[in-house]
Length: 361
Image (cartoon, rainbow, N blue to C red; front, side, top):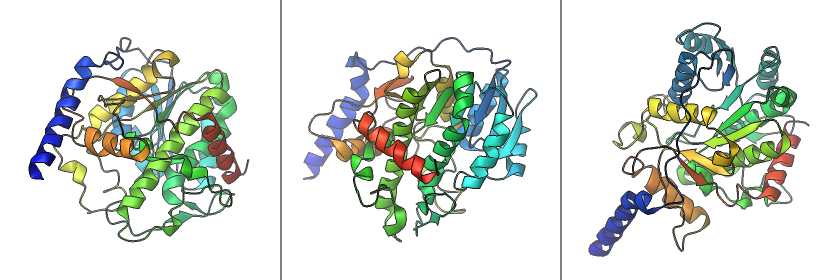
């Protein structure tokens, strides 16, 4: 038995390390030279720490005026003060609160033009998950906190700012995850409850696996929203990106202080700076032809793996190719096709309609 397991591990490792060299369809892309962003206004949600803050630092260093958010105004102001250049400022934004989203949107509208809107803010339940956690501040009723934070708050912001995005020709970047492959159409299949599987109300202590599945659903909702927004806003350019598996405080220090964060101990994680660079790349990539229907990511995946479909394929991508092998492949920026569910226009429309109901539109 152990020899069989060893053989499987060796074969998978060989494919992951050698695959990119023989996969003509998925080679690293070349970005245009770093551009001067002077005169551009860039909004970064979740810009006080981690990959979001690293992206804000880089965008500011190129001359952009950066508006970044945190759950408190003080924290956002402190982060903005660390940026080089002038004109940067922080704003409070709690994506789990509809009132907070509306207040933030009013402030953003005063900018008159937004060149880049980078949806980075999000969360994941920590390893001590005890759930369910729910917020009742949205017009549609109770919603799981992770759904509100990772999807619904950003969706509500899109609705409030849609005319500004259209007039600005904004580059809208959604920070999703390879985990979106773990999401399935079942998240919207329950006709009695439109949100279906996207509901943490049945989760309880010790159900971290199901909680991570819910995280995958929220990341799929990011992809569905991005693709529908691309159809909805003709002047916008929309890009989906993952920073990869990075050693940041997400899921640990931000939500459950003092709890063990495995990302800090796995040697193959990317740094927050490397993750931030991926977000910056998504703001600069040349055209929709490069990124349309794709996910930008800092590693190659075995996209056409035989036999595995749906969440099984998602598990391979997420738990093996990202968490263990992402730094073993040739470095670069790759673009891989989004999941079949993410590209399903019917599912995009159903997710959009449900989200509109939840934000009271």
